[in-house]
Image (cartoon, rainbow, N blue to C red; front, side, top):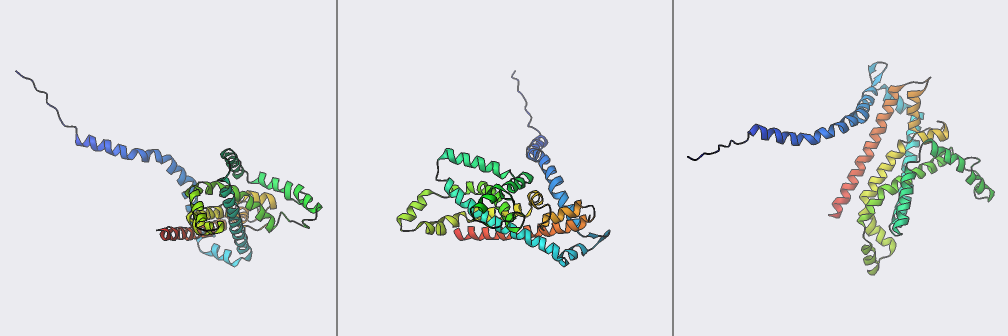
Length: 295
């Protein structure tokens, strides 16, 4: 007699369960990050948005009306945007020149410069303001040296131009770190080929290098603007809150003992977010156009 072994197919439900577990496992690992993002990003934004419409315990547009009727608040927005745009533009230009030079020097020196730049990008806030006071303050070492040689008559670190200098300083390292990988898209052979065809250096940069780098340059410019608009600690430590920028106004409305108006601060924050969202949309539109033109 011969014996036979009977086998049964695996249950379809078990296969479905196994497949479902495999698919859901990445989401489970992502859950802590999603929770963190909700608690520290989405939830505060939702709270700010809702409370921006609350005025004397009622839903109203009065907070926004008060902002647009106040020349002092509008001046805060104007000063913040002026500092952000110009510091981002100048910082981006300097960072582009630095990265272009870094690509052509010895790798050991380049690694050291990148490491120093990474350290400099984290040097901000109160320590940065204190360093600028020591160097460029009224009795700062560099200020006294320039006055001794008659190069400057007066330099006010605590005014518009002094703050612009401070902003440019902390924009440059961030710009370098963001642009450095983008320059991998450029090939040295392109410049050599353009030179053989009779193109000058400025023509190479204008017609070849900058169009290739334009998406990275635009994206970096937007990040620098957001970084500058959100600056608070350095400005407050340097000016003690006496220079009217919008982040200082928001802080004064949520921490002041006399003028505590968190709902008004929420409305200012919503307008600030709307400005950044609009700038980002323009940036994405320009990047899309640049990619379309390359095709």
